[in-house]
Image (tube, rainbow, N blue to C red; front, top):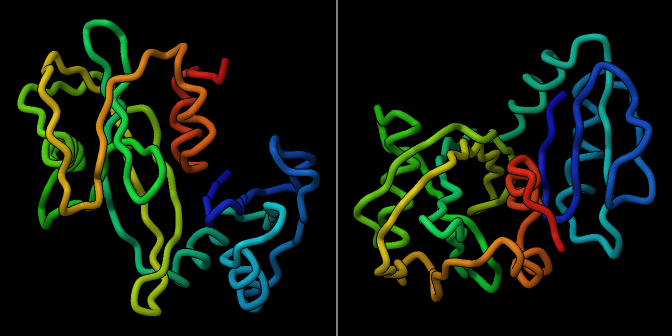
Length: 207
């Protein structure tokens, strides 16, 4: 099954219909027949809705559907990190009015682990950073200059003992802070669905 975050909306690509999805009143299941379905679904998902919507495109070959869907976008590869310190606190950045985890685009011929380390260092001013494990990959879409982008972000569990944090202001980052896991309520209330998925994968839940 493939999962794409599109603003507050969600798209699944699967071999069978989806019965329900947490956070949505219903799932709109549509059997994939041909690429014409994207003409209707993509603009709807990319609009800001009064109530978030969830679609599931299903068919016997979800890999084929996924490949057809990806052709509607330019793929961007990125890496990021969920960083903890020795006290177990998690590093969050505040960018463009929302709490986020540090991440950024890969450079040419760069391993994705190298991308994740470099971007976290650049955005947060960290020097000593260590990757512990791969958490998950997420996909989300956005538009730049009338061009549709599909960003694949590989997320890694990281560790740092650095105390000094320097926000990368030119990237719109205005605050950085270490947050106790039991004090994440404000983060959960003002972050992105993709970030919530990363936290959920790490079994980090709202109190």
